Image (cartoon, rainbow, N blue to C red; front, side, top):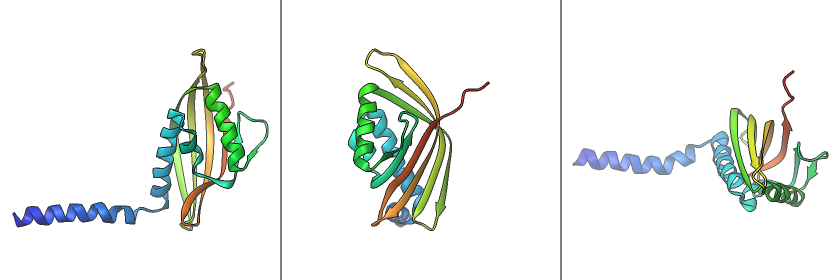
Length: 152
């Protein structure tokens, strides 16, 4: 019985200690996962919340960069309206950590967006997301999403 209590106590303690041991990559991955779910669900607030007020988004859906959280919100709201159903599939993700307050995520992303008429658009993209920890909070300061060139 004492062994059982000791093992249970260890597991409970690990549940409290493990989050404290999470590093920048794990912290950003947790936020990114929630953002991906928000994107798929069309949760605009959940998707935009991680952007810094002065963030920049370079999107293949816009000819010019989008500057500032409110402009990004407007852009994404328009996309959510144009494509009410969305799914994204991440491929070959890479995360690099610098100085415990800067994280860069790179990946390929295949997007399937469905318009109100049920037409599906597929986009093969590459993306880079730059996260900075400011004021104790991870925020996206720069994001670039471009379409992959067509194969010859």
